[in-house]
Image: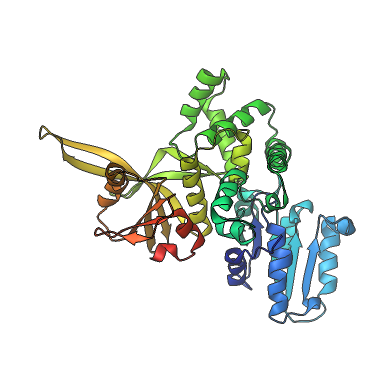
Length: 418
């Protein structure tokens, strides 16, 4: 399999060099954290002339390093390797295996000539740990499974075939090494059940596994739909006969978010410039895991397209909300009306903002008008983009709205600057 460069994440590590903080690479298991640190970043350091003696690289899940899992042993070992005043890069893979790892890392930060990078995963090391335990001394770099462009850089086949495989089996790197459809499905089902969900169950001491499994399944089936815990709880009771409270649903969703399995996008009133607390949309970090939760039965490509666009925007460094736009007018009787329309994504990064519609197809003028209407009612001057599945030529209309194919959007890193 070809080497996948993960250039976006490598650059984020490079940008954080010597910033005085512990660089903490997070993300779901099997998404490529170790490869990013131990191969790509290591090769970068070697390429710029850093001597091997000043790169302390330890894989803590290697049985050869079992003796270093004791906190004092790891700290002592690292300090013994620092023999001069030159800068040392410390690369620690799977740091969560060490007891009191936060204390160890904060202690190493007191040394004036170290730059520290770690990876962490599983039930002992999730998103909120970075905030609560490092107390301002940790700098989180979250990585996702392969984006479509990263996937295609190692895919042996056409773009159309790659798209079908990607939206079915997702972007966990090891999926690319599975040769048959059956092996891919079995791998993903096994990972979801035996790794990701087990981590959550273990961390939060969940007794009723049926409930957490049901939450995952219904979130998977409602990707791209507005929902909230109360609505989900009612669905469980009516459709599945499963008694579960909205508080329990809310709690389980927070566990899934914290474990990077799902991500929430809030609604944002574009004109009123305020957030609406409920309902929200939930997207899966990996489409293969989403499909595995449903037994690969529900393959609604339009909703999956929306999920993929969301992940691409997150990868590009945007914060992403669901836009709500107020539309006013008069009906055929001249009576005033006011209603709200949705913009799929409001993507923000610094002073930059983009409004993006995910439109699987726009075969008719009526459908085109439907997708453009909310964008036309936004009165600022930020860029407006409609992404369609059709392999069309990129174009800008008289209203300044750009329409492009999903392939152009995902494969061209500068697609949003057209």
